[in-house]
Image 1 (spheres, rainbow, N blue to C red):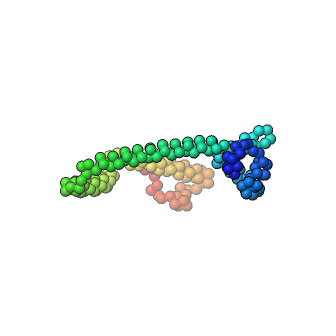
Image 2: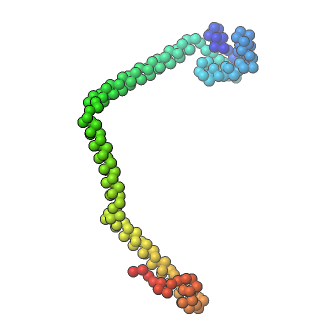
Image 3: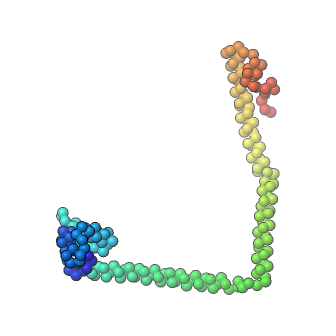
Length: 190
């Protein structure tokens, strides 16, 4: 279909293409519209709506310019990648300088490994004694104080309910305690 556009260098409507394409290029009439739309979607054929009609065209110069632009983009990308490759090769060469496998280097690598292991052991030991950290102890004290206040508040609520039940139903205190499972020594925390 592109050959039709390039050979004639003309502008066509869909109905014109449906007549020309089957005769000249052997494209089935049923698929002309789909092929043309796919060429428009790919940017190979231009389409413009004028009034109620769609006009289609493609000139060889546009395809040539598109290929040239694509080639320029690809060449610039290639030069960037080549430059990056050269820079990486230089950095590899710099990194290799002074890194020959020597006895001293092997000893230093072993020492580094043992020091890292020792650091991990020390971290684990510090973690064991974390509960003795003054800051952690202070946080525990504050949490205990909050828990104590909450327990005393609930104790206060229980005494209020017992008092209400005694007045409302005339129950004895020891019967209320026995019914609800409240221990005899139930009192506020000090």
